Length: 248
Ligand code: SF4
Ligand code: FES
Image (tube, rainbow, N blue to C red; front, top):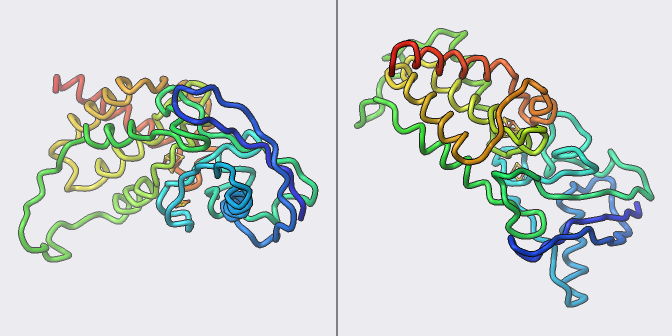
Protein backbone atom coordinates (compact mmCIF):
# COMPACT_ATOMS: atom_id res chain seq x y z
CA UNK A 1 0.00 0.00 0.00
CA UNK A 2 1.12 3.54 -0.69
CA UNK A 3 -0.19 6.01 1.85
CA UNK A 4 -0.08 9.72 2.52
CA UNK A 5 0.02 10.70 6.17
CA UNK A 6 -0.81 14.21 7.31
CA UNK A 7 0.67 14.34 10.79
CA UNK A 8 0.38 17.02 13.47
CA UNK A 9 3.87 18.34 14.22
CA UNK A 10 4.39 20.55 17.27
CA UNK A 11 7.85 21.16 18.70
CA UNK A 12 6.76 21.68 22.30
CA UNK A 13 3.88 22.80 24.47
CA UNK A 14 4.30 26.48 23.64
CA UNK A 15 4.98 26.12 19.91
CA UNK A 16 2.34 26.51 17.22
CA UNK A 17 1.61 23.17 15.56
CA UNK A 18 0.74 22.35 11.96
CA UNK A 19 -0.12 19.38 9.77
CA UNK A 20 2.84 18.07 7.74
CA UNK A 21 2.36 15.73 4.77
CA UNK A 22 4.51 12.59 4.35
CA UNK A 23 4.34 9.92 1.66
CA UNK A 24 4.80 6.42 3.07
CA UNK A 25 5.22 3.79 0.31
CA UNK A 26 5.39 -0.02 0.63
CA UNK A 27 3.16 -0.39 3.69
CA UNK A 28 2.06 -3.96 4.42
CA UNK A 29 -1.67 -4.40 5.15
CA UNK A 30 -0.57 -6.53 8.12
CA UNK A 31 1.29 -3.65 9.78
CA UNK A 32 -0.24 -1.92 12.76
CA UNK A 33 -0.78 1.82 12.63
CA UNK A 34 2.13 2.34 15.01
CA UNK A 35 4.39 0.25 12.77
CA UNK A 36 3.61 2.63 9.91
CA UNK A 37 4.72 5.49 12.16
CA UNK A 38 7.88 3.45 12.95
CA UNK A 39 8.59 3.14 9.21
CA UNK A 40 8.00 6.86 8.74
CA UNK A 41 10.30 7.64 11.66
CA UNK A 42 13.09 5.43 10.30
CA UNK A 43 12.94 7.32 7.03
CA UNK A 44 12.83 10.71 8.77
CA UNK A 45 15.81 9.73 10.94
CA UNK A 46 17.80 8.53 7.91
CA UNK A 47 17.05 11.84 6.22
CA UNK A 48 18.32 13.72 9.28
CA UNK A 49 14.84 14.97 10.21
CA UNK A 50 13.11 14.91 13.58
CA UNK A 51 11.01 11.72 14.04
CA UNK A 52 7.34 12.01 14.99
CA UNK A 53 6.90 11.72 18.77
CA UNK A 54 4.09 9.37 19.85
CA UNK A 55 3.32 7.38 22.99
CA UNK A 56 3.34 3.58 23.02
CA UNK A 57 4.33 0.72 25.28
CA UNK A 58 2.64 -2.70 25.15
CA UNK A 59 1.33 -2.50 21.57
CA UNK A 60 -1.20 -5.14 22.64
CA UNK A 61 -4.13 -2.92 23.60
CA UNK A 62 -3.59 -3.26 27.33
CA UNK A 63 -1.46 -0.40 28.64
CA UNK A 64 -3.37 2.64 27.36
CA UNK A 65 -0.19 4.49 26.34
CA UNK A 66 -0.97 4.86 22.64
CA UNK A 67 -3.53 7.40 21.63
CA UNK A 68 -4.08 9.51 18.56
CA UNK A 69 -6.94 10.83 16.52
CA UNK A 70 -6.96 9.06 13.14
CA UNK A 71 -9.10 10.62 10.44
CA UNK A 72 -11.00 12.53 13.11
CA UNK A 73 -11.78 9.51 15.30
CA UNK A 74 -10.00 8.73 18.57
CA UNK A 75 -8.02 5.48 17.98
CA UNK A 76 -9.25 5.37 14.37
CA UNK A 77 -12.09 3.72 12.48
CA UNK A 78 -12.23 0.24 14.09
CA UNK A 79 -14.56 -0.18 17.07
CA UNK A 80 -13.11 -1.51 20.34
CA UNK A 81 -9.57 -1.15 18.98
CA UNK A 82 -6.59 0.85 20.23
CA UNK A 83 -4.30 2.59 17.72
CA UNK A 84 -1.63 -0.05 18.36
CA UNK A 85 -4.04 -2.83 17.41
CA UNK A 86 -5.39 -1.05 14.34
CA UNK A 87 -4.10 -2.76 11.20
CA UNK A 88 -3.60 -1.20 7.82
CA UNK A 89 -5.90 -3.69 6.09
CA UNK A 90 -8.72 -1.43 7.31
CA UNK A 91 -7.45 1.31 4.98
CA UNK A 92 -7.25 1.48 1.18
CA UNK A 93 -4.17 1.75 -1.01
CA UNK A 94 -3.68 5.42 -1.87
CA UNK A 95 -5.49 6.72 1.24
CA UNK A 96 -4.62 10.04 2.83
CA UNK A 97 -4.80 9.69 6.60
CA UNK A 98 -4.86 12.53 9.14
CA UNK A 99 -3.09 11.85 12.44
CA UNK A 100 -3.53 14.25 15.36
CA UNK A 101 -3.01 14.21 19.13
CA UNK A 102 -5.84 14.09 21.68
CA UNK A 103 -7.28 17.57 21.79
CA UNK A 104 -8.58 18.57 25.23
CA UNK A 105 -7.82 21.39 27.66
CA UNK A 106 -6.83 18.92 30.38
CA UNK A 107 -4.39 17.08 28.04
CA UNK A 108 -1.86 19.68 26.83
CA UNK A 109 0.30 18.66 23.87
CA UNK A 110 3.87 17.83 24.95
CA UNK A 111 5.22 17.20 21.45
CA UNK A 112 3.68 16.11 18.14
CA UNK A 113 1.20 13.31 19.08
CA UNK A 114 2.22 13.10 22.75
CA UNK A 115 -0.07 14.71 25.31
CA UNK A 116 0.30 15.05 29.07
CA UNK A 117 -2.26 12.70 30.67
CA UNK A 118 -1.02 13.38 34.21
CA UNK A 119 -4.49 14.69 35.06
CA UNK A 120 -5.75 11.08 35.02
CA UNK A 121 -3.04 10.07 37.52
CA UNK A 122 -4.11 12.89 39.85
CA UNK A 123 -7.75 11.76 39.69
CA UNK A 124 -6.66 8.24 40.68
CA UNK A 125 -4.48 9.71 43.44
CA UNK A 126 -7.48 11.65 44.80
CA UNK A 127 -9.27 8.33 45.25
CA UNK A 128 -6.90 7.50 48.10
CA UNK A 129 -6.68 4.07 49.69
CA UNK A 130 -9.03 1.26 50.62
CA UNK A 131 -9.18 -0.18 54.15
CA UNK A 132 -7.70 -3.57 53.30
CA UNK A 133 -5.65 -5.47 55.85
CA UNK A 134 -1.99 -5.75 54.88
CA UNK A 135 0.29 -8.72 55.51
CA UNK A 136 0.09 -12.11 53.90
CA UNK A 137 -2.45 -12.73 51.16
CA UNK A 138 -5.89 -13.63 52.58
CA UNK A 139 -7.58 -16.89 51.65
CA UNK A 140 -9.38 -16.55 48.33
CA UNK A 141 -12.78 -17.18 49.96
CA UNK A 142 -12.21 -14.87 52.97
CA UNK A 143 -14.34 -12.10 51.41
CA UNK A 144 -17.12 -13.61 49.29
CA UNK A 145 -17.81 -11.49 46.20
CA UNK A 146 -21.19 -12.05 44.53
CA UNK A 147 -20.84 -12.95 40.84
CA UNK A 148 -22.81 -9.87 39.58
CA UNK A 149 -20.55 -7.61 41.66
CA UNK A 150 -17.42 -9.32 40.34
CA UNK A 151 -18.67 -8.97 36.76
CA UNK A 152 -19.52 -5.27 37.22
CA UNK A 153 -16.12 -4.58 38.79
CA UNK A 154 -14.33 -6.48 36.04
CA UNK A 155 -16.17 -4.61 33.30
CA UNK A 156 -15.22 -1.23 34.81
CA UNK A 157 -11.66 -2.35 35.53
CA UNK A 158 -11.12 -2.94 31.82
CA UNK A 159 -10.50 0.82 31.42
CA UNK A 160 -6.88 1.27 30.34
CA UNK A 161 -6.73 5.03 30.95
CA UNK A 162 -6.01 5.89 27.32
CA UNK A 163 -7.99 9.13 27.29
CA UNK A 164 -9.88 8.53 24.04
CA UNK A 165 -13.13 9.29 25.87
CA UNK A 166 -11.86 12.79 26.68
CA UNK A 167 -10.63 13.39 23.13
CA UNK A 168 -14.00 12.38 21.66
CA UNK A 169 -16.21 14.29 24.10
CA UNK A 170 -17.41 17.70 22.83
CA UNK A 171 -16.97 18.96 26.41
CA UNK A 172 -13.53 17.40 26.93
CA UNK A 173 -15.04 15.50 29.84
CA UNK A 174 -13.18 12.75 31.66
CA UNK A 175 -16.33 11.37 33.27
CA UNK A 176 -16.22 7.94 31.60
CA UNK A 177 -12.69 7.33 32.86
CA UNK A 178 -13.40 8.70 36.36
CA UNK A 179 -16.65 6.78 36.62
CA UNK A 180 -15.00 3.54 35.48
CA UNK A 181 -12.43 3.85 38.26
CA UNK A 182 -15.10 4.73 40.85
CA UNK A 183 -17.42 1.93 39.71
CA UNK A 184 -14.63 -0.63 39.75
CA UNK A 185 -13.90 -0.35 43.46
CA UNK A 186 -17.46 0.64 44.37
CA UNK A 187 -18.79 -2.69 43.11
CA UNK A 188 -16.65 -4.78 45.45
CA UNK A 189 -17.09 -5.45 49.18
CA UNK A 190 -13.52 -4.27 49.78
CA UNK A 191 -14.39 -0.90 48.26
CA UNK A 192 -17.35 -0.08 50.52
CA UNK A 193 -15.78 1.68 53.57
CA UNK A 194 -14.45 4.66 51.57
CA UNK A 195 -16.91 4.43 48.70
CA UNK A 196 -18.71 7.75 49.21
CA UNK A 197 -15.70 9.94 49.94
CA UNK A 198 -13.72 8.27 47.14
CA UNK A 199 -16.40 9.15 44.55
CA UNK A 200 -16.65 12.70 45.84
CA UNK A 201 -12.88 13.27 45.91
CA UNK A 202 -12.29 11.81 42.45
CA UNK A 203 -15.08 13.87 40.90
CA UNK A 204 -13.70 17.02 42.56
CA UNK A 205 -10.23 16.22 41.19
CA UNK A 206 -11.75 15.65 37.73
CA UNK A 207 -13.34 19.12 37.81
CA UNK A 208 -10.19 20.80 39.18
CA UNK A 209 -8.10 19.38 36.35
CA UNK A 210 -10.15 21.30 33.78
CA UNK A 211 -12.19 18.46 32.28
CA UNK A 212 -15.65 19.48 31.11
CA UNK A 213 -18.96 18.20 32.44
CA UNK A 214 -20.92 15.26 31.06
CA UNK A 215 -23.96 16.10 28.94
CA UNK A 216 -24.68 12.50 27.90
CA UNK A 217 -23.39 12.99 24.34
CA UNK A 218 -22.20 9.37 24.36
CA UNK A 219 -19.17 10.02 22.14
CA UNK A 220 -16.91 8.67 24.89
CA UNK A 221 -18.35 5.18 24.98
CA UNK A 222 -18.50 5.07 21.14
CA UNK A 223 -14.70 5.37 20.88
CA UNK A 224 -13.72 3.54 24.07
CA UNK A 225 -11.48 0.64 23.03
CA UNK A 226 -12.60 -1.34 26.07
CA UNK A 227 -16.33 -0.80 25.70
CA UNK A 228 -16.81 0.95 29.04
CA UNK A 229 -20.58 1.63 29.16
CA UNK A 230 -22.24 4.96 30.01
CA UNK A 231 -23.95 3.26 32.95
CA UNK A 232 -20.77 3.69 35.04
CA UNK A 233 -21.42 7.46 34.98
CA UNK A 234 -24.83 6.79 36.53
CA UNK A 235 -23.08 4.77 39.24
CA UNK A 236 -20.67 7.65 39.93
CA UNK A 237 -23.54 10.16 40.10
CA UNK A 238 -25.45 7.94 42.54
CA UNK A 239 -22.38 7.56 44.76
CA UNK A 240 -21.73 11.33 44.79
CA UNK A 241 -25.40 12.06 45.49
CA UNK A 242 -25.40 9.49 48.27
CA UNK A 243 -22.31 11.14 49.77
CA UNK A 244 -24.01 14.53 49.67
CA UNK A 245 -27.22 13.24 51.25
CA UNK A 246 -25.27 11.59 54.06
CA UNK A 247 -23.22 14.78 54.49
CA UNK A 248 -19.92 13.00 53.88
S1 SF4 B 1 -13.02 4.83 29.63
FE1 SF4 B 1 -12.33 3.84 27.69
S2 SF4 B 1 -11.67 5.58 26.41
FE2 SF4 B 1 -11.76 6.35 28.52
S3 SF4 B 1 -9.71 6.09 29.36
FE3 SF4 B 1 -10.87 4.22 29.89
S4 SF4 B 1 -10.43 2.79 28.22
FE4 SF4 B 1 -9.80 4.81 27.46
S1 FES C 1 0.56 0.67 23.21
FE1 FES C 1 -0.43 -0.25 24.95
S2 FES C 1 -2.54 -0.04 24.49
FE2 FES C 1 -1.55 0.69 22.68
